[in-house]
Amino acid sequence: MMLDRRKFLGFSGALAVSAAIPAGAAEKPRIAPRPIPGTDETLPVVGLGNSASFREQDLETAANLLDIFARHGGGYVDVGGVSRIAVGTILRSQGSSERYFLANYVDSRNESALASEARRLSKAQGKQSLDLVHIRDIAAFRENHSLFRMLKEEGLVRYIGIARSGEDGFSTIAELIKDGLVDFIQVNYSLLEPLAGDHLLPLAADSGVAVSINRPFINGRYFDVIKGQSLPPWAADFECDSWAQFSLKFIIANTAVNCVLTETANPKHAEDNLGAGYGALPDAATRVKMQEFISNL
Picture (cartoon, one colour):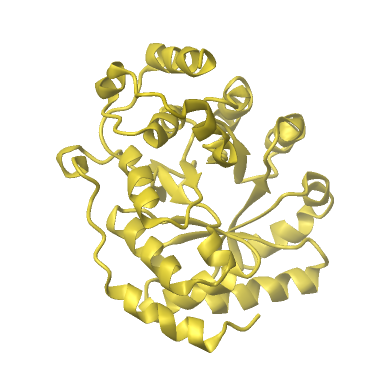
């Protein structure tokens, strides 16, 4: 899909936007990026989901968001559909494609179509090979696994995996992990949806599978739960400055998690989310306390 020329030219001014570190974050150590299992490559603990600014081809806002994440050491960006081209356009124009880890969604059609799509996206994103391709259809991934493995063998893709939201897919994702078919999984896990932490995330960690997390705010439902509430005073014990960071730090404190994806088109929200990547993390006892606190609201 071609990008609108006006939109393409309009984003150029955003490249010079200066994104300040969140208030107080400069005084806190940044949480170390976590290694992709079995490699020396690391990922920052807070990533950027498939933002509406990407999907709507608002390249000025998208460029600003990417710049903010880069200034915080961020790099993982989730892209699907037209977002794959929109983000690629920005990164190629900046000459910064290799700075970012792009997680692409692709179709599982046939070998020639899949390879052609991978080559097209690599060119659009300014990469020699795609960082990660994943799909949401678990059955299709298993059925067509040889096609995805082929992408890796031909050097078109570095990692492959599955991305889902919803507990109904956890058991089948676990089987993919046990069968050694995935390098990455992306699943939902948060204070309001903690089930993945019981078995799936430990299994991924023990099996050398990288984990990214979606729905940290349950598409906004989390903020409905805490609306009108003040942060508990003990949130300061793990250097938490906002309700968004309260959820994100709970997730990041699980060491099986490589990266939690925050989906926003608001630069101020992006700054706040990235603040969760600084300072202390809650210990196990505190994480239980956090869950109890949210459950009682």
